[in-house]
Image (cartoon, rainbow, N blue to C red; front, side, top):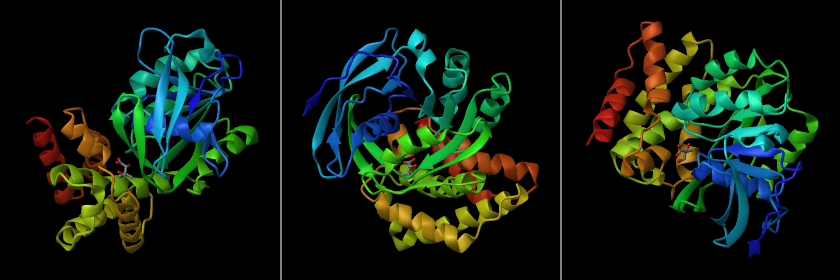
Length: 323
Ligand code: PAF
């Protein structure tokens, strides 16, 4: 089905920064409504990309039933004056791109815009929350998703990973009830959308998922599901135990057995998926290792803790990326 987007108007008030696999997935999910999963006009959702001019593109989305939807999307240039209409900005760039991509946009957004960071790993929220002090009307929520998508080509993605999207307010003006309601559409395909306060424990839980699945799938060149094999279990437990000790020093209490269960669930839910780190290594792109296992090592140094398993994973991924 071909859906033509209306020309960009003041209705365009949700923007997704980053048109990679997760950015496009969020775009399509926000544009799909109801149980039928029919594509609707995403005329209140735009993407923000790196191209020199605002443009319209036909995007393809192969959903969980194998149906392919075609949508014409507006991709705003980062200087477009329509950024001033955006009141919800969902940031889907990689952790290492957040600061450079987002901070120059803050002064161009609606003064009460709400920003949601949705990347793997931890760290960028510190710089973003510091920058937000100069924009008192803005608000920041942090989130994480176990949903995943595979790029068939630059503008065609396939929905390959299913599961929960978890969000929570971090600082500044809270998300309005209206926008919270608008985000419920992320739940329309029966995947859970959960709100947490405080949000940091949930992000540590997601850090554990990524600290296990991402480097192990990249190093073993396998789909997530293969990590359920017995031979990986001792390493998985060791990664989690090290993370739990570090999180405790950071004031976050996590139960190793619950984390292990959650990691195993995500391995099963995303079994056909090739993790983002697997894909980054395969395509010779930078990885998020410094924001995942690297962050665990960085915090461990602060607390004089030994985290040899996480350290060796960082070293191996760095070596693999240089090949
Ligand atoms: O980075 C990823 O690939 C995803 O966060 C996840 C949940 C591990 C699924 O592949």
